[in-house]
Length: 267
Image 1 (cartoon, one colour):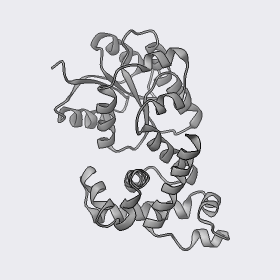
Image 2: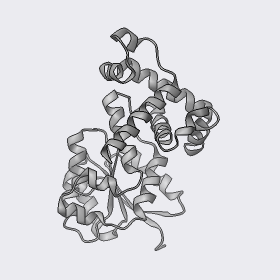
Image 3: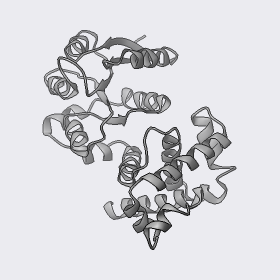
């Protein structure tokens, strides 16, 4: 039992907690050690049960996620904190990370990705306690976690573009861009290479992945930040942005190229 990752859920959404509890119970390497529906209860259970990972909602009664994070700085051997939030406000995210959160996910989110992050951080040393006291922020934590900065950068870029996070294809598209950044040749045949890999990870089908990604791109193109799209894709006017869509492959390639350039400039 000592080898299991102990997970504590802190969220006032009981339905969500039940769903996450069921998924965690199916994992061979995890143990759900408690569920708290408000911040005060979360603090009590953290002290009593000493979880390895705390999945923390921001909006809770009695004591919100910020308040819980403030209390954690006073608790020895505090857990790694993965934040769930419905509000992707940069100032809020920066504050949470500076207080010690190691990751954040915007609701709605992909459960399999959340479980991957639980494994990633639940097995890693809790060195972020030093960073919390020192007051270091997002850039420090991201760079100390291999691969995390890439996902955060893609998420931030989607937010700027106005890509809707509540569509199923959002996670697929993000995964596709990450793979394209890491493996440039994967775009040589996305039907045979890219879509099957994403489908396997998310328990879907290649055609389902392609359809969901295409739909997400079209919605973002039509309803998102048209000025951003104009600058990124070189569209001459508003009508060209709202009319003809880029192919899925060209869209992914363009975003991947931009991310690579950003990473190169920041290195």
